[in-house]
Length: 533
Ligand code: ADP
Ligand code: ZN
Image (tube, protein in one colour):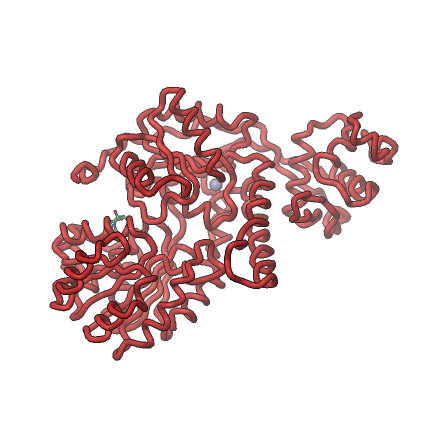
């Protein structure tokens, strides 16, 4: 049986998706492979098909118990014998499974990373024919990644102890070059065949909105999309609780998920959502890695997430069935502060020295900046996102809120020069609110206490709205004309303003009308397999 016949026989699919065939062929030729594919692209098939075809056992290292259970269930239903070894098994169950594994009952064994160096498991692995070790969610090995799992570092030592080196395959949806280099190095991969498949998911509509009242924006969206399955991501557990409660009060079937809930509540809520007993899942980023629900029609971000990687991964959980789905981010300037706060608090519990922590935090602040630009640019959102992941694309996609909004280009050079002058004359020590207040001639107490009402820029942009000045600053930050400190104060200073001194206009797109009415969706076909438990 060849690759395609195997795909058809066990999975019932007629054709490979982008990248799958190449990865499988290389594995079958004995090469290490690294597959970088967005969520929903179909990574599992890439190791499950060759695992079924090769002699010996394939070990799949995966960070999540719930994911293992689902995958193993599906494989067995499809006729590929599989098992998992993790902490959810009782001692007796584990012994039984190990016994069966020793008789080559299973082609594929999922194993938690913390088990790899366990004596009994190691002894087992050493005496068996291990054809391949597959590392799922491989970015967990990298400290640059957002989901670093220290136990992933044991994989290398595990591989070294095997009498015969198996093929090593690794899969992730994180494409930055540092993470990639870490995966190859820390998993000891030997000149792997690498493939990065298109990150563009054409069926996803991307939007950024800046509502005055986020909850009202969410509410009007879910009202318009009743009975559609969707995920609402919040930054904190507290906001998950609040939003979920309000939605329920307003008559929606919402459930919640975050790391502060008990294991049993989490798994119950996840199931309720998975099997469409609840339509809306309100969650922190703890929800999602490994969930495979194909008919999620929207992913709404109630807050801006900490970086583009997280955003793309979370938003990418919408529309995995290939049908149209919406990815909407509700941006508020406060989100930047919340994220900065979370970054300041991060890595505190981890065992690492100050230097390393400071380095990681600086990196995370950089990433936060790129995320913030996504929320403030007026160009095509998809183009920006793909560029971030190293992919070229047209500057216009026609399926994002910026492409679909009406903009008017204006030469803002004179006003921009006033902004720069104001920042300089007030000593480069204020954030955007103060700068805007000075320029608009506000008479508030803070302005007075700093004597800024005597500043030479005071009131010079009186006739303009706050929103216009904010947008101008966002644009100037994006172009590097202004800089913003990444501490909690977000102080704005002047960067390279030479572009404003050239003999040509400085254009900014000003939104005339944001089209809230998202293009009409096609009728969705409900995936029947979801109801067979
Ligand atoms: P990933 O791990 O990359 O997020 P999965 O491996 O969970 O994605 O696959 C996502 C969905 O796509 C699954 O429902 C899977 O069965 C389906 N899928 C994968 N490969 C194919 C294919 N060649 N043809 C049709 N469906 C596929
Ligand atoms: Zn676009």
